[in-house]
Image (cartoon, rainbow, N blue to C red; front, side, top):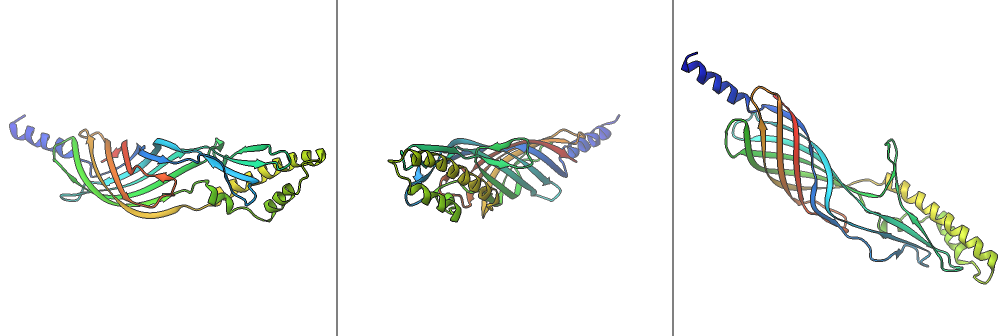
Length: 272
């Protein structure tokens, strides 16, 4: 084989190191996001019969995502990403029996219909769609480091807070609360009835919270991001690996959420 043939073969392999298009799946933890909890139960009705308390979380929101990219354009590349991240927290209703001031705690769980989990602790869920323009730092074969940025579309769920739970008090629950307020603490039969009624009220409230949580929509907002990353692809083999680090700005979140605004993406995909 002469020198020209070797050079041509090497050039072909180098060219094939860069994917024209690719799609991938990745692990995408959200870094630094915190959710503040409540120090004590807060009443959600005027007489304090029903109260709510939720905890928080701190550190890393677990997540995953999907990516598609195009390297065909001159000078710049384009990639589109969709990430889903979530953090779990505990929440409980506290129903007070006015007859003896005993408190019935009702842990809140959310029904996950159609999944094998059945019920789970409430979760704060953040979903983000990114459209990014990236610029390769070098044009070396196999490894393609780049920097870039773009637009982000944020969707996030609500928090089971006092405002949310207060909003679902209706005629049925208010009637049960009124009955409890009329209990005679000096009557043993009345005390026993109050204990049963407080348990019933707790279960009714729990069902209403669960239903409202499933029906509640997502908050949406628009922001942006900057990123640094790299993709790697061996010649001929249609498999690529990639890693990105993104910093977000903008976007609206519930007041209990202190967004870390940082996401790592580590994944693998099919590329040609």
